[in-house]
Image (tube, rainbow, N blue to C red; front, side, top):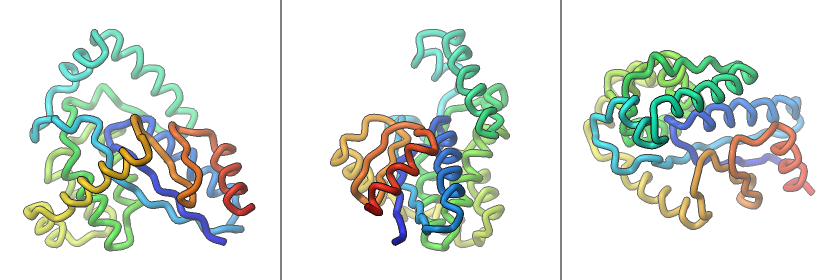
Length: 210
């Protein structure tokens, strides 16, 4: 029996990146005994973010009360990230972006069989390389690295394609009472909130099999 995992996520959430790594460890631990299909769904942590984004220092200072508090939290996340093989380079990130186009690209990649590669590329671009994933040039580059045709991506970005999917995903999140991400739904039966340990995923896989 195959297993489907629906992941509700935002690409500017560091815990979503950590959750991805932990889910991958759980899948690897299955050692091919079961096939796990992972599907990524959009969640906007900042639905009112301006299209051009805002300076990260300004955004984080406002959100957490001070830049010092933000840096303390970044240090904690960085330590967890290193234990999962992720290098968070928060010092390279200048802007907190609007993620609508990034989510549209993830949706588009799913239509072309390379969704995981695009999700991974976006996480890496934003968190490890400090690139602006709200900018269409970065999105084109990430898409090309994942094997997508640049012209097809450019046509999509200059259209309204995928906007309805983002709206529908918002409704889905409300149905599941999602208030934070990452949020995992295993086989449409078991809901897991947060960047769970690999064992938690494995237990869920076992439950749906039973």
